[in-house]
Image 1: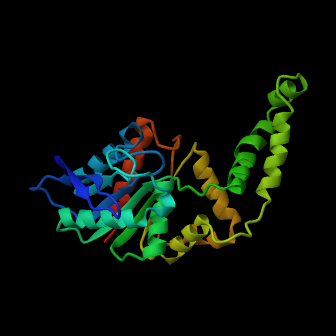
Image 2: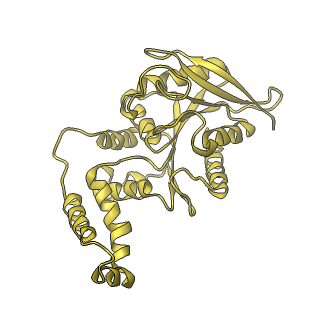
Image 3: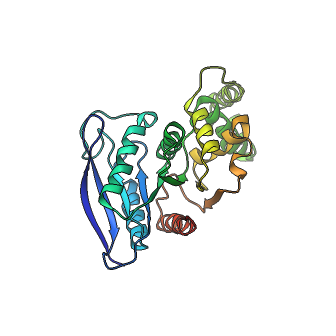
Length: 281
């Protein structure tokens, strides 16, 4: 199916944002669900290795309008960069824009990578926007000192300690004792309890719990951020049972890194999202 794209101006709270709308050919059947790509990290609407361009065109080719846009201070949007925790008004403006430019759209799905996934959850938690019918979350960001330490201990240090070569290098002077001290520090950090005010991780859990629509969780097999997310949900009582709810679909992207940079991982991601979208009514 042919895909048409156009640049749009999205009125923001302080400055306009640039977006690209990808739509199916006018003669083709269009779906009433649109996708808004929420960009994460120091990225703009194209994404790493054109990741967001590719997924937008893939979904639009299947009949789903897609909007990807630049947050303030990124890409071609003016202004100062903002934290993912402060993007709710901008995401709302993007949802308004896809409705304005695609009049037959009745609902949207937010699709985000890393802290773009986190921002999507925070948006639903803070706004309860009924126009959002689903969430597609890839490697959500829950980074804290404790979550990083847990992931490092389980997925790096324990693996290293099980290697005979590590001990040969250690006692042979080829590995510094600093590595052992780092392990001790990580073990101490991972036991730290969060007794402070509500964190963005807590708000994400609240958003997940309150959201009634379908959620697609995609985790890259070779990504530390993905492993941090899993460790966090297993260790924090606020997440108990949330990933096992019937509305949650979970898939692992084989041999994928954080941004699914290989062609195989990219195609697998696009396939997972499209098949899940087809189940949304």
